[in-house]
Length: 401
Image (cartoon, rainbow, N blue to C red; front, side, top):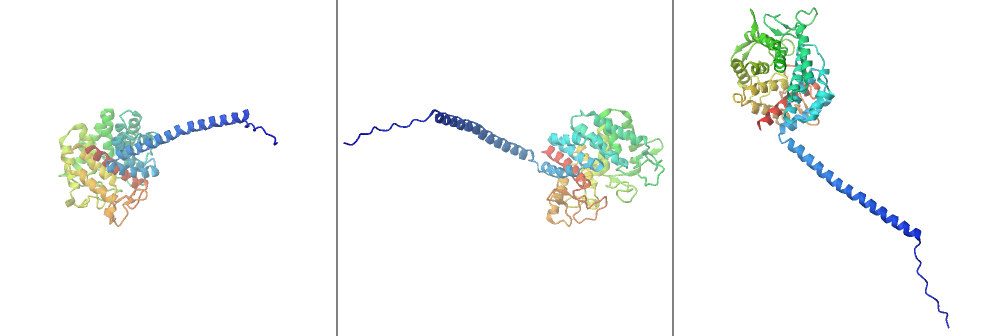
């Protein structure tokens, strides 16, 4: 008889095995617990990113705001702390006014403190810096008084040097003091007289009468010595002065439209209707293609550079007479569209470089403009001018909407 064997007992897991399994289960649970929230956070972050992208796109519903930022991106890369940088700082100030974008504020008031701007050589170098400081003071809430103090210092320093003078028989601002004993060219033109614009803005900010007195002296003259009104303005929007190269001695490089900006500042203070009439008639004449200054279809300057200043001057005129100058915005829009599209793709010269949104200094598609380095593209000079044009227009275009 075979021996009956007892069934083997099932081997029970050891305590150590149970412990290892339990620990493994806990580790897995812990890992899953950690992973799941992270997945939720990733989804949440993605949704947040999508929301931010949507907000950014919505922020740029106005294509001119978007284009101004694109121009500004390169301007910030090539920025230098001098008069050319001040051009772009003016455009950025208007873009800030439209968007309240704190990154623009940080760039010009913290990362690149405007007080560190150069003194320059000609007096208009100081004027552009002062104007940038005064616009930023105004548009940032009139809180940063140090901007006013620095602009005031620059202005008074130039005045004490004798650059406000009647050297040529009428009151005007000069690139250098006419009393300077040096072998350099000394002259006056409308660029130098942007110091009159500075004087008006300083008066608005400080209420110190000396600044208004200076502005009125340059405009009206004093005693037997006339001002620029009697000397350069001929009526019906016509201005005449000495001729010459645009940047070196020509008294009215932009045909008189530059005085629209100066007189707009004076008009805001005095409310003198004669000033308003001069501003309107000057802007109308300059933007009428029959008078030969601008193109008949796209309204770009045919023979001059300084397009950022040109656009700024026209918009200053528009700001005090929007009803009378209602055609200014659509004409400037055509001008900027012409630049952005390289004259609808037919321009002989690159006006807008797609790869980095660099803008050419001169805006005539066939070239040949008078001015200062008209063929430059994307340099601090050309891009600063472009930022001034696109930034100021973006503000007014967005405001109108």
